[in-house]
Length: 450
Image (tube, rainbow, N blue to C red; front, side):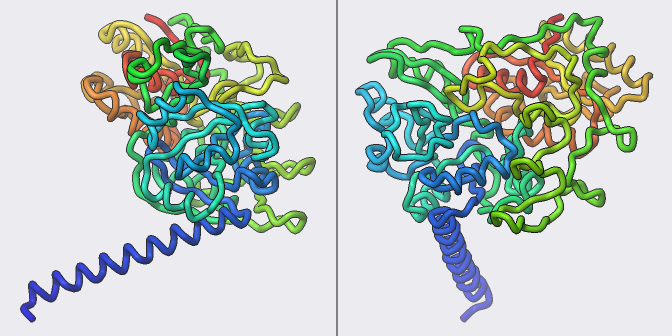
């Protein structure tokens, strides 16, 4: 056999063996979920943290790993529409048409739950369940192997930017979970759109995401928007008060960055930790002695609910219309999400005014010795020479690219220990609605309009 032919044959054999090994790993991960394990896996949106949706003990481990509030419902993932009848009580023709159009894909539909079919920890005690079918071959094969509906929020510590790479999952959850299936970078980069069916021709967006309002309007006669109905209020910051707002975020005197309990001082990665002898759930420094739920810096000592890391209780963060005792109808509606460790403000206005304003703020912050960052776009990156770190998440002309890279960029600010971040707003058209939703939440709903 010629040398080139031998190389080709060897390469084909290696590829076949790798595919077989990958398939074996996926099957093993699925079986682990089916037997009560908790495993992170890729989807087309972000990495999910999966457990058997029927098992309260398994679902409890998701909340423990994430430090997630228990009244935040989880999305149930399926690999085949035939699974719906097992845990969904009913759905109308509009829901069926939406499934036909967008499944598999980044659309989650809130539907009436069949009583007792999934853990109440999945539904947060509501009479509905959020469900979707991911558009990712690894995810579909894993769910099929699990032979159960899989509850799976994003595979990150609660409040942190969602993971779009397996390494992001390891950074947040190493030592907390049973394994990670590495499927490379995710495609959409933002979580799924969550909707509820209001009537035979109307849907309401509870969380914007990978399916846009315009796309939903092609199927539904009317699309309502939860954000337009003022479920959450923003805190408008006067331009002259921006630095004061940023300074409300506490930083470590050692490194200038809010520290997380349990993080290795050597490389910033969560340390591998021991297993609790009480229930077999991995624990690490900062675990509450009261209920075994992992905590981290910035968690309220009053109720154990994750607060934005280092944020003062007196910041006056955005008021949330949802009452403390009211469970949100969808993930992403009630608590601080997607936040970097440094303090962030979202700046909105004409591009030239935004750039001039941010550069004035950079000059003042730099003079105070603050490590500064700017989250911008390809078209404007050259305007911020005075920032310690200016990062473009993508192009204003292709916001899909910005959506794919947003969370990775937020994590890069963390890696570089940036203390104060100014983020440019973008158009709310199309995927821009979801992008602005995530930017607003990452900024703690603090917006400067110039």
